[in-house]
Amino acid sequence: MKGWKRVIHEVKADVSAARDRDPAAQGVSTFEILTSWAGVQALLAHRVAHELAGAGVPLLPRLLAYLTRAVTGVEIHPAARIGREFFIDHGSGVVIGETAEIGERVTLYQGVTLGGTGFQRGKRHPTLGDNVTVGSGAKLLGPIAVGSGAKIGANTVVIEDVPPGATVVGNPGHQVKLDGKRVEGPDADWIHLPDPIAEAIKTLSQRIADLERRLAELDGAETPGEDPPQLRERTGRSSAGG
Ligand SMILES: CC(C)(COP(=O)(O)OP(=O)(O)OC[C@H]1O[C@@H](n2cnc3c(N)ncnc32)[C@H](O)[C@@H]1OP(=O)(O)O)[C@@H](O)C(=O)NCCC(=O)NCCS
Image (cartoon, rainbow, N blue to C red; front, side, top):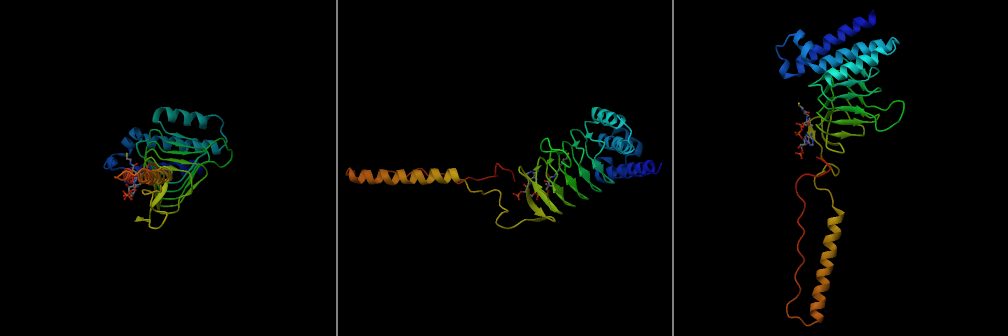
């Protein structure tokens, strides 16, 4: 009975989290949110499935999770541990694995995966601290820890721990901000990465030009050979993300 009281409190907190964090939910009644917000419905079903699984009820928790996925597009394993005031915006395509742990006031957008990296057993899914935001399409893989207050950009792939307060973007995910301020330092520039292949081609083409010039001198040609075409410096964003 105590457990079910907690579930009711959790669901109330989840509904008010949806109202706080979704601009589209302003002034919308609790009934409307419960009946038409897929992320809220998925979470409500998970709270019940998690409680049933904890009480040792067979089959029903998985069946509930399966039906919820069919209706909302959100798949949450009944054993996943989710803190208060959790909010999934838009719902569809979210996957939360069995050993995932989520702190309080966490927000996930559509298409987020909290998954494993392979066929390991035991703890194999991410642990998210409090107040973490994960952008749409982001993949967080393995038993990594994402510190409280971290922000994960849309479509980011995270396979390493994220410090508290960090903003991480790209594939592979890399830190661009800490506590809202840009990260400075030698490892912070992900745009102008060294390009060893371009460097090697540049050196070879210079050596060929030197040889051609020397040959022309030996042949007694009046005009020296042409300079090699200059390779343009790469500009724009790195293909590795960022
Ligand atoms: C990651 C995020 C939280 C960063 O927001 P922010 O703190 O305002 O950071 P900025 O916009 O100043 O971006 C910092 C740098 O990261 C880059 N960046 C931001 N988001 C990125 C992303 N998703 N992927 C790749 N690079 C990204 C910016 O271009 C900028 O690069 P620069 O330093 O070369 O200029 C935000 O961009 C984001 O992705 N939010 C998710 C939103 C979402 O999923 N919405 C779905 C609604 S349906």
